[in-house]
Length: 395
Image (cartoon, rainbow, N blue to C red):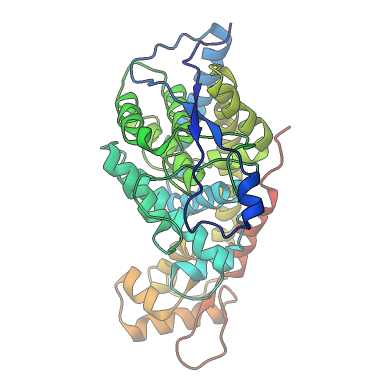
C-alpha cells in the first residue's frame, strides 16, 4: 500500500502578465488566458508517514549504504571530500542541462578561465558547501543563504529572496495557462517555507524518507524565480547531514537521480497528487547508485594518486609530496594557490611546481613566464570520465 500524503488542490487566479518580463504583441497578449490554476500546497509539518515493509526495507538498505560510504574509505583521505562535493554539484547541474569540463570548472574555482557554464556550476558547488555548513540550523535563513550562494554571480534573478511573482514549469513562456505545473502564488511562499522548516526539524521519520519528502515539498513550493532544482537537491543533503546519516562526505545522489531523470520528474508529479512512494523509491535508488558511483570515482582517483607517487622523484615529506593531495581536490593550480593552501613561500611553491612538471605530473597551460597555470591531466581525465558516465542507469 502506497504511503498516504497530503495532495495538492488548486485555485483559480487572475492572470496578470509580469510587467517588463516579455515584450509581446497586443495580439499575443489578447490570446493569453484571463486566469490560470495555481497549486494550493498543504502544510506537512505534522503529517504522518506510514511505510509498508518493502518500502521501509528499501529505504533502510539505501540509508545503510550511505552511512557505510560516509564512514568508510571515502572519508579516509581528506581531498576526496571536496572532490565528491564538486562532483555532486556538477551532477545536480547536469540535471538542469548545465555541463562543463573538469578543467574549466577547476579553472573557475581559482579565478582562471571564462567559461560561462563553469561559473554557473561553481555557484552550485558553493550552494552545496553552504548546505553542508548550515545543516546544523535548517531554518528559512539557511535556505536563503544556500540560494544566495548559487545565484550570487548573476543579475537576472533575485538571490536569497523568496519570489514575489508567479512562476511555472513547462508550457508557454508567456503565461502559465498550459504549464506542466504551476506552483503556489507568491504570497503563500513564506508560510509554506516556515512549515517546511518545521517539517525538517522533526526527529521521528526515517532519515532518507525525511530528506526525500523535504526535497519534494521544496520543489513543489518552488520558492525562488530560478535555481529551485539545484537548491532543493542541496537541501536534500542538508537534511541527511542534519539527521546524522552522513558526517564527512557528499554522496553523489544527484548522479543517481540523473540516471533516472524521467522517473524523478514523474515522482515529483506523483508526490503532488498525494502519492509519496515514487519519490521515496527514486531517492533510495539514487542513494544506492550514488554510493557506487562515488566509490568508483574515489577508486579512480586513488589510482591516479598512486601513479603520481611512483613518478615523483622529490624527497618524501617535501612540498612536492604535499601537493599530490592538493591536486586531487584542485587539479588546476597556480603558484599563488600552492602558497595559500600549503602555507609555503613563493620560491618553495615554484620549485615544487617545477618538480611536478619535470616528473610528468603537471603541465603548464599558458606558456607565459608569469601568472602560470598548471593542470594535472591524469586527475582531470578521471573526473571527465566520471562525468561522461553520468546519466547511465545502473544495471
